[in-house]
Structure formats: C-alpha cells, structure tokens
Length: 367
Image (tube, rainbow, N blue to C red; front, side, top):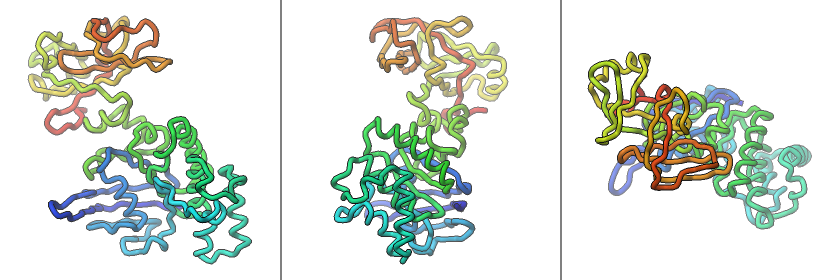
C-alpha cells in the first residue's frame, strides 16, 4: 500500500494547430489504502492523470510521488503499480493461467510461488474453472475478472483502473462494481479509479475528485459533493437527474424573493437564513439550483406551483417529471402512479429551503 501525491502537476500536448493543456496545476493526495475516483466528462484529463501515475506519460511540470518517492523519471516497471485497462488487454493466444502468470514470469518469480498466487486469486475472483481457456472463450464479465486477477496477482502498491466496466452490460456493471468495492475492502490496496459515469463514482469512491477541462473542481466524499457542490459544474455533473439551474434576480428590498427570468413566473420566497447568506446579492442576478427531491407532488408547508409538463420518465419504483418554468426546465421525483401527461398543467411544490445558489459569472456556490 502507498500514498500517491500529485504536486502541482501540469501536462501539455502540442498539436499542429494548438497547445492543449490536459492537466493544469493539479494538486491531489490519494491516501494510503484509499479508493479514490477521478470523474468528469470526456477530455477532462482524468485518464491523463492515471497515465502519469502509471509512467505512460511524463508531467510537463510538477511531481508525481508514490510512497514518498518522486517517480517522474522512474520507468513504469519500477513503480510497483498495476493497471486495468478499458479493453482488458489480454494476450489472445495465451490461456487465462498464462495471462495471469505472464507478469510474474517476467519478474522471475519461482514457478511454485506463481502457482500459489494464481490459485489464491482465482479462488478470490471465482475464475478457477477458466484457467485453461483462452480470452475468446470468455464472456465480457469473465475477461474483466481475468484482467483484474492479472493486476491483483502482482501484489502492487497501487491499482490504477481506467474505466474497467465500460464494456459490460448494465446489469453486470452493477454487480461488478459491488464486487470491486468488496475486493478493495479485502485487499486494502490504494486504488485510483477513472470513470465518466457519476453513478459509478458515487457508489464506489471513498472520495471523488471531479475534473473539468484539466482542472480539479472539487475533492470530497460522495455525499458532500452531492450536498455541498463547490460550483455549478459539480452541482450539474453529480446527481442523476442533474440539478435544475434557474436564472433569475433577487429582490432588492425585503422580504427576499427570487424572480425567475421568464415573465409571468411567480416570485419564489426565500427564508431569513437564505436572506443572510445572499445579502451581498440583493438586486443582482443569481442562479438557483434544485435537486429532483426538492421538486415534488403537492405537500403541506412547501411552495405550491402549477406548471406545464414537458417530459415524464417512469422508472417503476418512482418517476421523474420535467416541468417548464417559463423556458427553463425543472425536474422532480414523483410517485409512479397517477402521473400527468406531457402538455398538461400539473400541480407541484418546491422545497425552497433545499435550494442552492451560484454566482452567474464565476459559477461558484454562494455560501
């Protein structure tokens, strides 16, 4: 096990037309034994960060430190890491046993020790009956287990996983991510996991680092990211469906209300506590964010509205209903029965005490 540190890391790529900054001034500590998830949209720099730890890329500036040792110039084979790729990268002409044994043989581990290690890992991952097969004879889930086994059998200080579940079907992804979390708890090895799927990030990570355009947006526990997003990007990226963001202006005089941009929409009353927090923004534009659970069927003590229905998404146990607030969209969680039809005007209530507020210029949360 080992701590991994990104110390003001920058990575730039030169192309024919421009200089691309894949990572900008990334400072991040992955604690010993932690399962840290790097999440963000395509092109945000998360895979680049993983490749820098693996030694497949070299930082343009800054330092990568593993277990107290600066490894910028250390070859990948000497970093004591193991990487699981998106496409599994199994040798097609080798059996599962030989795929598992390959790295150990390259390190000149004795045959008896190789056999012992593979037997342990095969039992752990329930692939003992597959050792004589070749990759083409395996399902996607079985190949993924073999790729994991090849990493585990090396007993590295750090696991690096680059979207290892993306090739699996939806049901198998849910099953396998639970297995990965259980496996991590058993092994306790420092793990950096890359995904673009925020549901994977929320369910697997002990902490999550949210990246966008090469910059770290927020690093925190899954629940804190959901409850206290640092900016508009994190608020909209974390959570499914994403937080609805309404543009509008605060009243300049008390009592404080939020006027949505669209004419004809009623003002939304805010609490005394919110008035204190937003004192510097009186009379100014702000963004108001509401998660789906704050948009609900009519309920006593909440702010009532009747709005046109744009989209209805039944999910069995509940449903998501998207309303039109002027030209802005507002998604709420509703019971699965008695749902409205698109085009209807339907009653709902807003839990405005659960509202988030953001500066429209910087996108930062207003605390």
